[in-house]
Image (spheres, one colour):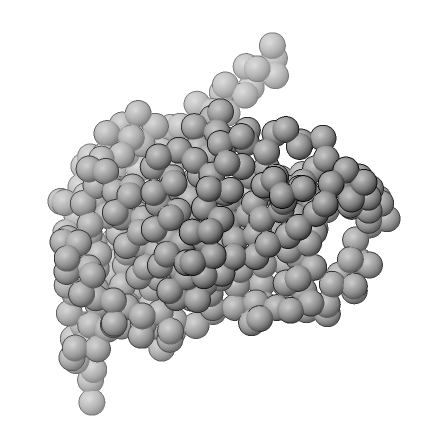
Length: 376
């Protein structure tokens, strides 16, 4: 017997989005290895309330006979594609989002993605570009999507964004530490000895909303004295502070809050803000007080929190450093997960122009520029 048709609900109202939480959470629980806090209802709700700006929700909810099969968490916004103005469908995300994906049940992946692309093609006059940024390169959704797009009506362009380091948590701290290079072990030992000679050290782990409130000012103090504050992107800026406070409250309610702080003689010197869920711990933000820069408080705090995670994982199987492979992360991991950008263009004239411009003309101009620079 043939399966019944898939229905698609377009959710553009925040109130309706809030009503989706029960079915959203059930779908996330059966989405397999791709499940992530960045696909959770509470993450998207927090993000939307603080960073949506003039964007419009455009969530696509796929159901069969009332059962939710997939959700494409998208928004509509104006976007500049190398200077060309476009009507864009994209993930609700910014620099605080470590990665993005579609929310699809494992058993219905191929069928749902095919229906999603048919929907986009039918409604192609409403958009010029679908911009799916920071998707994991190993996402089952990405692999299935690329197979469907090869023979579909939508043109696509895939490129690597960066590789993001991680650790598989197993074997305990002692074995992991012994596996670091002699140079790294010596550096960490020197950092620890220097700090212990200078001050009384205390590492605090925050997991509840009450604990977060008790340490909120210490976190903001460190953030306001960090190098990121001078760039206008620390947790002490009004927009980020409001977002992370709401996020901490919701994450604590879901059991996924982890904030690590280092105190030197009772003074806050460094912190890391993490989220946990689905067997993963994600490092969203890390800051240290510039006054203590010479003592490397951030490196010491990273070592101590990794020690605790390795010796008492509490369900964490993977530690996600977030971002790209910065030099300080290399001392901990040589494993990295590729994040990619998938762009879709349709058959409407302007979208075709955008496709040619972004995927052919811009790369050609860059090659010419690089050639001229080499010649000198």
